Amino acid sequence: MASLSVPPVLTPPRDDAVALHKAFKGFGCDSTTVTNILAHRDSAQRALILHEYKAIYHQDLYHRLATELSGNHKNAMLLWVLDPVGRDATILNQALNGDITDLRAATEVICSRTPSQLQIMKQTYRARFGCYLEHDITERTYGDHQKLLLAYLGVRRNEGPEVDPSAVTDDARELYQAGEKRVGTDERAFIRIFSERSWAHMVSVANAYQHMYARSLEKAVKSETTGNFQFGLLTILRCADTPAKYFAKVLHKAMKGLGTSNAALTRVVVTRTEVDMKYIKAEYHNKYKGSLAEAIHSETSGNYQTFLLSLVGWDR
Image (cartoon, rainbow, N blue to C red; front, side):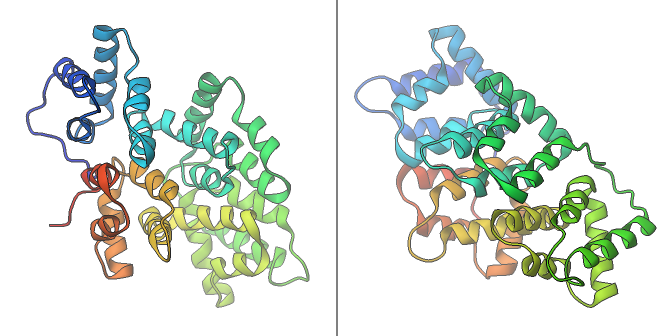
C-alpha cells in the first residue's frame, strides 16, 4: 500500500509547471515549493507536469531540477520524477556505470522485481542508455553472481499463486542434495531453481525445506554460498516471502551505526513510496520497535529530510 499523499483536489499540471518555474526564478531555488508540488503528485501526474513544463518553457524539467537542486535532495528528486520503470533502469545504470560501482544496488533491483517489470525495464534500459542491460552486467560482474543475474533477467517466471506440491518437494530435495548434503556446493542447481521458479513456488520450497530437513533454506543459502551470489539468492527468497520486511531491513541497515547510506535510503524510499511503503513502515515498527519516519528524521537534514518525509509520511 502506497504512502504517497495526494491533495483531494489537484492543481492542473500546467499550473504546477508554472509554479515550479517561478520557484526556479531569482537568486536560489524555492526548494520548499518544489517539494510541496512534486512530492504530492503520483507518477502519472508528474509525467503530465514534465510534459507541460517542456511545452511552455521549451526546457526539460528534469535537467532544470538538476541545475537548481543539490546534494542528496537533488539525487532523490531526480529519481522521483522519473516513471517507475525509467527509475529502475536509471538506478541500474548508475550502479553499474557510475563513479562507484554498486553491485548490491543492481542486484537488489533485479532480484526484487517481477518478470513483467524486468522485461519492460530491459527495453527501457536499451532505449535510454543505448546498450543492453545484460551487456553491462556481463562487463561488471563475474562467476555465479553474474550467472544468477543473467538467468533471472532472461527467464519468464510465472507470477501467479499456483504451486505444484510435487515440484516443490523435488526442488527442496534437489537444493538439499546440491548443498548441505554434499561436500561443496552445486551452484548450478541453486541458480536454476531460484531463477526459474515463481515467488509463490519459492515460498513453498522454503517451507518444504524446513519441514523435510528441520533447517531453514535461508540458513542453507548462507552456509553454502558467499558474497554477491549469496546476496542475490537471499534477495529472491526474502522478496518472494515478504517484500515489505525485506525493504524494512534494507532501510534499517542504511541508517544504523555511524553515518547513513543515503544511496540505499533514497533508492528504497523513492522506489517503494507508490508501491508498499505503508507495509514497509509497519514491518519496520514491528521489527525495530520504532518509527521509520522518526529514524529518517534523526538521520537526515534540510531539504533532503523534508522531501523523504513528505514521501514516507509521519505515522498517525
